[in-house]
Length: 502
Image (cartoon, rainbow, N blue to C red; front, side, top):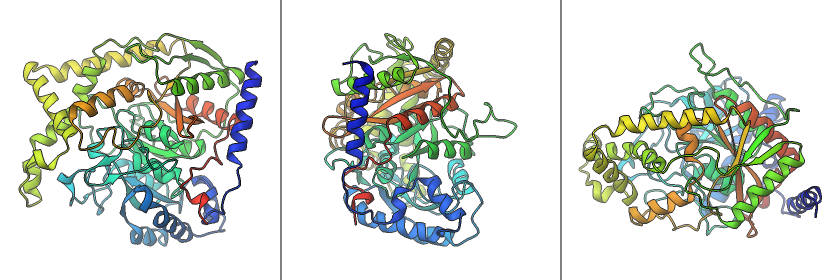
């Protein structure tokens, strides 16, 4: 069978699957993405309050099974919807904020019993930009403790469940956001990514998830570590929603490090040189389902006229990558455990970290502490290594436009495989195997996006990752639009979703 025939067959099967008869949607707004809902408000066809009330009804119907929304801010949302909202691109559209981000006056638990009663005292930069874009915040979404693992099932907040199959996980750390969007509670939702936490839930929930370039987005707080690895953006069902929230969130001031992307509105005629790889930096091939999806994505890109070249690995990351990245990643855990009793006293209670925090957080802190005791220059060396990785990727992208790879090593995991009661050693090994393709871009600072092109034979989403040079989000979005047109996912809904509830 020729490549074109193969792809035509795949597209036909995808179309057939996407047009199966379903129950009538709970409300007419479910079928609209964020920009579509905003257009209804702008044209006077619907009020923001109507959109908010419809979203609340969807959450109330779906959330008991999915556990995506952990703090309901319905009255605040209703009040905002009836106020004089900013005239932004998403004016009047309901939105959810991840429970790792500050939203003034709202709970901020970080998914941890240590902060169970914590209330945020200010808005983070990403929340400020969401409000400026006209979004109406109606709740906060589930996250693992401090966002440390690649599933969302903390002891405090419980497991967020995949709407395609409740036995499977929702990704982490923006798992609640992924579930809320995939199930149709809201058209898109706030997310953040320090090691893959936008792209992972996008992959397992069948969504678009963009990690922007380091220093691209507006922030009003300093990073917690010198080697800044985290960004805050969103997960969405459509490329244009992701493109527009990037436009609304990027730094456009005189201190902007990169030329603003603006709103990227569609594909480009430019053909790209794409480097394809499937092996991890340890030289292992992923699960056959993941490898198969990645190779099909490469074939689709070739069929669209792009030049795809297989490479052994995109950048030769040496064996110290994992150790050095963990030295950066575990610093915050060390600080939290070190200061846990003080944090507790500030809340008027006595805290025993060993009983209050999960084994993975405690293990991360111990890992950092033992390494720091042996090497006082640990942080300096880790920061230098991150700078080296960034330079290596800058050099690689002089010869290629895009890197194509898997997002995750395996199809979605069952809930419990990285459970919050399991030992640090067990979860650490699982996370390191599972998240083998995402943390590189947090270290290097490159933009990377997960796209929902295909599903596994079991019907679970498996995302495909595309990365570009620093500041080249537009290139990723142009390609994403093209792939969305070639293999539409708009009508692909999970079994548990507002689209399938009457």
